[in-house]
Amino acid sequence: MGSIEEERLLLEEGNIENKSSGLYTGDGSVDISGKPVLKQNTGNWRACPFILGTECCERLAYYGIATNLVSYLTHKLHEGNVSAARNVTTWQGTCYLTPLIGAVLADAYWGRYWTIAAFSTIYFIGMCTLTLSASIPALKPAECVGALCPSATPAQYAVFFFGLYLIALGTGGIKPCVSSFGADQFDDTDSNERVKKGSFFNWFYFSINIGALISSSLIVWIQDNAGWGLGFGIPALFMGFAIASFFSGTSLYRFQRPGGSPITRMCQVLVASCRKWNLEVPNDSTLLYETQDKASAIEGSRKIEHSDELRCLDKAAVVSDAEIKSGDFSNPWILCTVTQVEELKILIRMFPIWATGIVFSAVYAQMSTLFVEQGMVMDTSIGSFTIPPASLSSFDVISVIFWVPIYDKIIVPIARKFTGKERGFSELQRMGIGLFLSVLCMSAAAVVEINRLRLARELELVDQNVSVPISIFWQIPQYFLLGAAEVCTFIGQLEFFYDQSPDAMRSLCSALSLLTTALGNYLSSFILTVVTYFTTAGGKTGWIPDNLNKGHLDYFFWLLAGLSIFNMLLYVVCAKKYKQKKAG
Image (cartoon, rainbow, N blue to C red; front, side, top):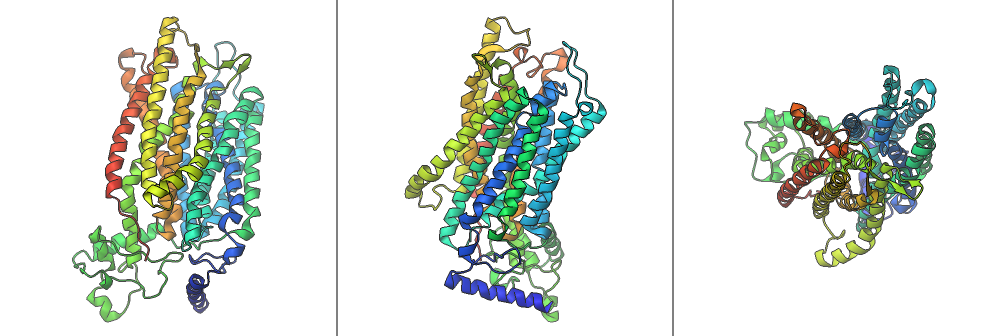
């Protein structure tokens, strides 16, 4: 115990010297051996190429599966449109739910580096399993003979979905940690590095979309034309490259120590506040319990200033007469520090902002499901060349790749002159702009479908399950608007949940940000199920039949546009009431 305490005191003293000398980081960063790190030798942009390369390759692998998955389910596993869309959104939702597992392990026990390393291995095994399921004849369903399409056997389904959900588990340890680990490379106590960190999130998302662009164009084409075994095998290879890239930068990385279970700390605050329910909270917040050391009692965390909201939770930090007499302040289930209480308050304050991201994610989910199915019944040919409908998602990616540098290099400097903010717009303003653009996106999709159905009626194609001669390129505006919305909302979320989260909960808060995507996918599946149930009642065709020429997909898009408008108005109210975190 003595050596650990000495190490902690030395680190605190080092942090004080760091701030004055500027040689070392001032945010408690250490190297892989646990020693304080020199700024000039580690972190900053010099470490980021390895992290951005990891993310680019991992996202290429992920989108190499996700982008065209609905086509594999309908054409190879012979599922219907609704069943395939539901399976895709459920799997994608799971991919954004499992980050909660990785986040808790990273924040509490392993740290972000080792969590990424362990879950990358699981991810790679899943990719290889999926590749085998599409390559070995015994694991593949039989091809259709005319209109007869035999169903996949239970064993074939089992192998395919086992690989698919191993990927979902693997991505759970990577997604909440990589963006936070990248942001950890910039010292929060250094104003210059803090500005660079804001830029990092933009280029982090840029690297995601470089991988996605290759997947939605080249990989999708390979899957549709050269076979699914090769089409799944290439993403598996790039996942191997991602692992190699990540380990290559180890000597340059800055590491944050895991601070113990954030869930346990939150439970301690709730239990302690309930046990002291009858005690009065003093008006003077300095009378509440906090450690006298410069550092927080939570490993890897700085102190957080007291806030006047949710005063009922402050009871957990009230020092009782019995504790004063005994001098024992060591049981966190009875007495918590102000910083520990403020951690829970911050999460509660962020909840309304977090919740409004769910509807946006439901809109985003349409890109890999109903947008693709809409494209399947449009004209996909350019001369003799046929465009895979899923490849149109590349225009969403192109939109992101276009807007990220424009936003970072042009919009931010201009906005900074008017707002005086380091990053041009606040994270909340940026997310609000994205929510507005999502309304325009769904409206554009509905207008395209209205015109497609009109042409189907004019050409008497309603009763035929065939493509309508309207170019698939009419989908470009909806993909382009969705890309612009992503740049604002998803990158804004990355910044918001990293900056506003307590130091020792950053992986968890990143996972909560990703959880909105999971719940958005589940919401999309739920809406699909409900809409199908009510619109097919009494033997009706419904809005989304297998023959979309008979349906009204436009009604579904208008429904999501209406939900997005309501969600945006709710967001504006919540954003105005939100109070920023203050570090102690």
